[in-house]
Image (tube, rainbow, N blue to C red; front, top):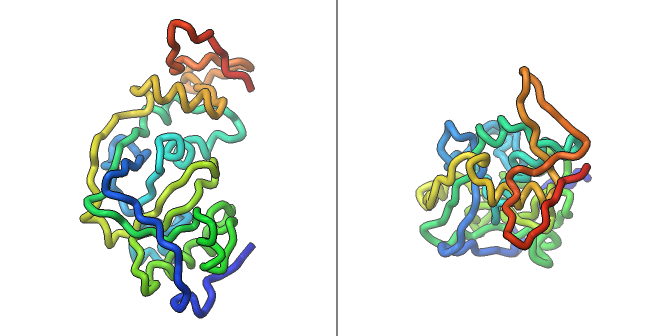
Length: 227
């Protein structure tokens, strides 16, 4: 539903979520680039519609980071190409002080704004980008937006405006997803994804694919990921 920012948005008391400096956030990014990147491409949900400021996207947990970067592209095929797990990696992020984010997650947050959940889950970005610009200029001066992931609404993410760039600190560059077998295995199992293997320039697929990344304890049975 197309619901642009109301004319009196600046007069409304918005709900604020404080992302504490003790919290760890997660960034899935290309391994040949640094984890901190405030994009101005105008192609993502909360990007500035005119590219007038940059936006950094983070997940509140690694599952969210995976779905927002890799999982979103394989929802129909259910197979993750090996190359994506090699070319994209995970990093952990924290803030040098608490950041004030427009809360679109807690009860009352969307209602105070005068919008609905489709703002963060709809397919088109034209409307959400207009909201991004309107909220950035709100008198409350938020550092960014706090919202539910479109691809797993039980998980949350944030979009940070580039005005808070000096407050972003990289805790650890964890490396490519393919080099984190325990975590990757848990995520693939959770979403019932399988991994494809490059073979002769293409991808090998099967009806039942073993998840080679799944970590097992001595007492856990061998499992296969079915599709």
